[in-house]
Image (cartoon, rainbow, N blue to C red; front, side, top):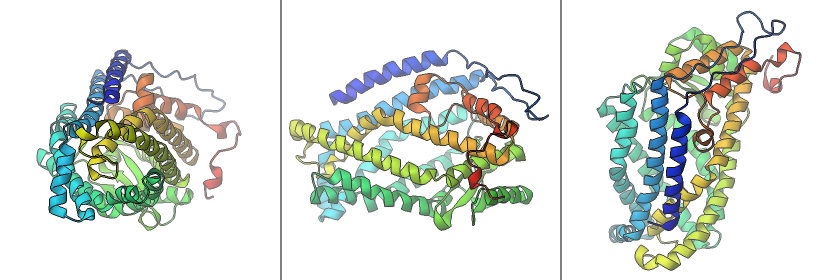
Length: 435
């Protein structure tokens, strides 16, 4: 194995042991101060985050192990294709079939993706089907899981076939600056995907329809109007066919923006709790988190691709006979890029996840300010914790390397404590609210 990947593997093993040690102690109860009668209205008293069940902690611990295995597997497989020369052989097959450069690049991607799908299948089956059923989090039949897996593969093949030529064309035209131009090209591609995914991709996996509860729909649209979101439609997704987990989100861009609720969250949360959740999701939209995240990740991509560019030159020079290619512009280099970006992304994950948690905290604040219902926000998070088998107060290493959202315990504490209107302090996001 590539030495850097081996060292990373050792680090990951140590990391998972630390994660498991931290997870053996159940989360501490919320440190909630007694409510001040002068600023707390009846019915708005703080509620503590409950301790997680043993089932939730088992799910948390097994998830840590699965994350480490998946991370190591994601590095080992491309390394295998590189050092055995299999990648070069796949390129030769693609070249014989496709003849022209464009078809060679596209066919190579398709062949490699299908092989990776087959190799990943046992782990994907365990993580996405067996484990979720074992913890009572899935309603999905094997037939639907398999059909969805093939749909995901097909969508990935189509999108990859249509776009994989871009970095390799840039490598041909500008071998020294391709990493910069590729990062710039990512921006319009991501926005295009955000635009079309709600209309053409998401409905491939679940049925999207109008909300059955028209009174709740009217309340959500009223909240959207207060948040300054015009022209959005509300969709209810038949997600209970797949899972018992709960979720909701605001998605789309320009004319495709929509408010989406899983039927599971409608069933399990009270209307007031749902309105806070929707206020949170609307906060992401109103505060421009999608745009800023795309730009942030594009900047990160510049650094990651530049580092991959520099490291790849050294590795190709040293191992070109084993790899079967002598330049990065050869499509057989794709596993090398996958390996290097995997290692570099692991190192960058703490920064990327911290940025995501920052946005989630802002959205929580937006949701509380627009609803002013602290108790509903806190009890909503408690139900999310229970339904999704979450650990409300995971260890620090978990938070740094795995958590894209603040721990639910911290979010509940924030919901209990944040009420500026009670003390006459200004609201941070009131300028976005319509009267």
